[in-house]
Length: 155
Image (cartoon, rainbow, N blue to C red):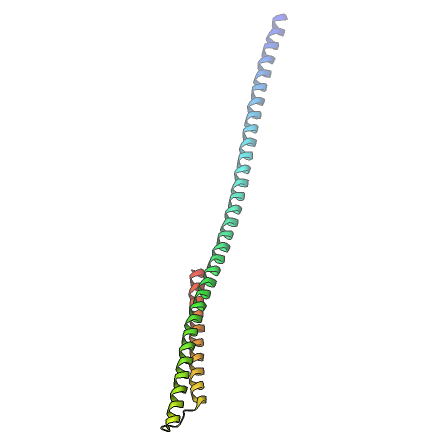
């Protein structure tokens, strides 16, 4: 009877050891699955964060590029306007000089009695027409530059 009890105890111990081993295997497998799930979740979270940051940086870069283009356009416009103002000043100075020269020439002719004076209104009208033409050309040039820059920004 004692041997029988010992055999039974040995068999039970073997069964318990096998059951314990199987439980441990299952627990290790479950822990490994949980670790893999956790790693996958961390990877997904990292990827999502990384993509969001990339999109944000891209938006900021585009915004900065647009601002730079705007500043460049404003600078070009200012430089063009300054150049045009200098040019217009020079033209106006030359017109005034020419007008004064013509007026002086007419006075001299009148004094000598050789000619009738030209109408001052006619001279003013011609100068005014010339001024309008120059302004129109300047506006057209500025629009051309703005359109070109706008096309560059889109491209």
